[in-house]
Image (tube, rainbow, N blue to C red):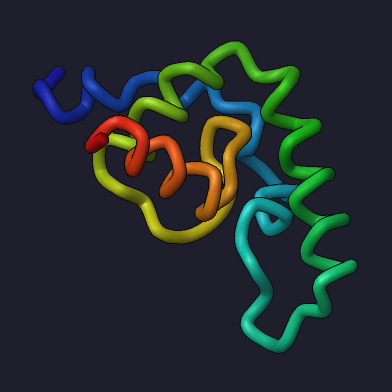
Length: 87
């Protein structure tokens, strides 16, 4: 197993894999604020049950992922964490 593959092995165990994966990212068309909050809430509920939530969150912060719900956090929440780390 390569270093990259073993570093991301947690992804195989992620609860977000499968047909409901679309709730983790915004749709290609306009999304109302209420719709976004509902979608993110559904995604975060899946994250709460995930056995690899910590690894996912750490990965998203490490690569500065700009889109979607990762490790139970949305884009703004991740930016806030990274900003606090810099200060």
